[in-house]
Structure formats: C-alpha cells, structure tokens
Length: 254
Image (cartoon, rainbow, N blue to C red):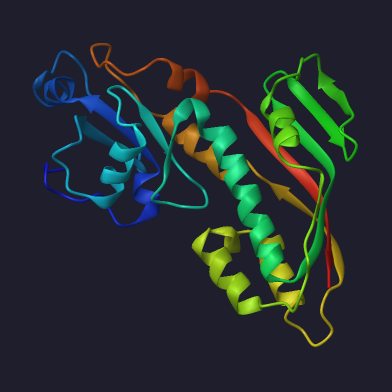
C-alpha cells in the first residue's frame, strides 16, 4: 500500500489494522532471515506513523488518539469505519451493538426493552444474570465480579421504557442496514413482523452482542509476527480469549 493510497472500501478487507513501525515493516520485505509478517485476509499491516496516508478512516483514527506504534485496531460491528483498541474492543463493541439494537426497536415503536437473562462465557466458565442482577456460575469456577458482563449490566438498566408511537419499518431497516444489524435474523424478523397489517405486539429474542467482534479478534490471532517487529503483546493475549455475551430480551410495542 503506497503512502498516499486509501484503505480498501470493502469492510471485510480491513477488519483488523496493525500499526507497524515503518522500519520493521520495510525489514519484513527484504530480510529473508528475519521472517515474514504474515497476515490473513481481512488484516492490514500499515506503516506507522500514519500521517502520510490520505484516507478519511485513517484521519479518524489519528483524531481518536489510537494511532500508537505497535497497536492492533479492531473494526466496530456497527460502524465499519470505526475502530477500537484491541484491549477495549469487546467492551466497546458490546455497548455499541446494544445501543444500535435498542434504536432499531425504537424505530419499530417499542415501548419497552427488558433484559430477562444474560449469559457470559469465557475461558474460565459461564455465568448467568437474571433481570434482577443476581448472577450464578453455571460452569467452571470463574470469578466474574468486575468482568465485562457485569460492566454491561451496570451501564444499562435491565428495563428501558420508550414513549412508543407508530412503527417506521423503513427507517428501522435503513438504520439496521447502516449498523449491520440486518445480518441478524432476529432483527430482520422484528422488522418484518412490525410491518404487517397485524403487527407484532411483544416478542422475546436472543442477541449475541459479542459475535462479530470476537470473530475479528480471532482473526487477529492468526497473524504471524517476526520477533523483531515491535507490536504490543497485549493484543496477542486478547486474540486468544474465548468470549460470548448473549442477552435474552423481552420487547413490547405500542
């Protein structure tokens, strides 16, 4: 990639960005003994500093302060031009996807979204929360206090009320398409059922809030890095972690 080029327009081609010091990146190209920087499809290795790459996505990364040497940046599931630092990717992606899902429900005339159940699975085990915030370890011997699942529960009330109103399926579909939620069967089904002459009044759905970001982090784990390349070690740890966060949500509509 030349310095004045743009990133690939296809989101799937830039799911992970590696910011590699220019000296190391050049060495990967000519040092046969040093080994190669091997990246799978969907991962881009960019020369740091990024200031000479004329691309609006890169400019956004520079403004956000994420353009640090050796960093791995993970694409957001709901805004493909937005990137997270690898260590914070799961938390930020979970929050952003939940906000986007609630916005779709609001477009469909929701009066209430209520989290009935929450299940978090990690390498240490599985823990569940009920709507009252009571948790139970159902697999393994993990200590989940202070984990992502608890952080999510503390930031978002289990029950949110809206004023309701007439459903706008076209607006819901446009927003879901913009935030990539149309890829989720439950979202498509909600839009369809709220568009009929006998619209849906209530529903219980399951939503995996971490599926997309987990796939991107797993992709990061497939990167092969020569020892002399100065990439941060933290992202390698993050890429190997098992994680899912599934919420069961009851929806009510006007």
